[in-house]
Figure 1 (cartoon, rainbow, N blue to C red):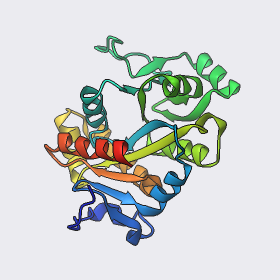
Figure 2: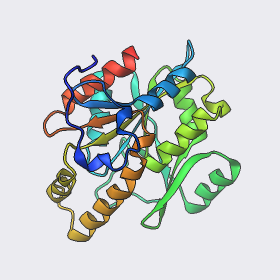
Figure 3: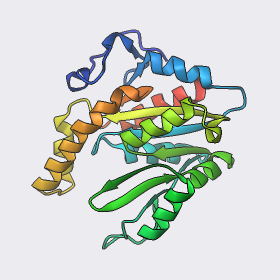
Figure 4: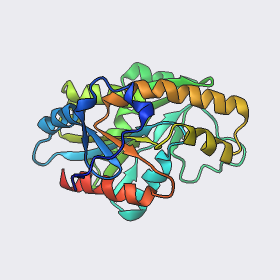
Length: 240
């Protein structure tokens, strides 16, 4: 599916990629970072189990992309992450993407070494569990891990450094972005977010961009073209 006609690299990401000549055009909506892809392919072994990491900018459509992948193929399963944030009003806990922990339960997991990566947002802890992720890898599924860019970078570093947990794993890392940075603001407005929330999310997105060059694939989620983007992501996972 290599796309032979060069597409436009979104201007707002150029300052966050050290060597633009490393960018390769995979398809109409997928850019690749050549060195990262080649490094990853060297770690792929026959019989390895795939793990897909979805990260990117707030409001870029990460959950939409992931949900479409799962709807397309029953083998794709979301890996539950953990949080100390209680359910909000209106959240019923059905199909919860998180396992809800008390702060003491979270600290116990952290002390035991069960935490792959963690972060604190708005006074709540979020983390990815080794045991939960490993169970998903060993099941007869293709797990999808939805994680923030710093967490994705940390997990990728563990994989590349030879952490035993990932000895039989092939990681595919897609960083989701819109084709224009201001699209994020509009999507947040459409969600009914207040100005402070929008300002905080836009600031966080600017910080998250600093980790875009750690990904293997940059997935441009254009308005109304999420289904097409999923087609291209699935082609990469099934053929590369």
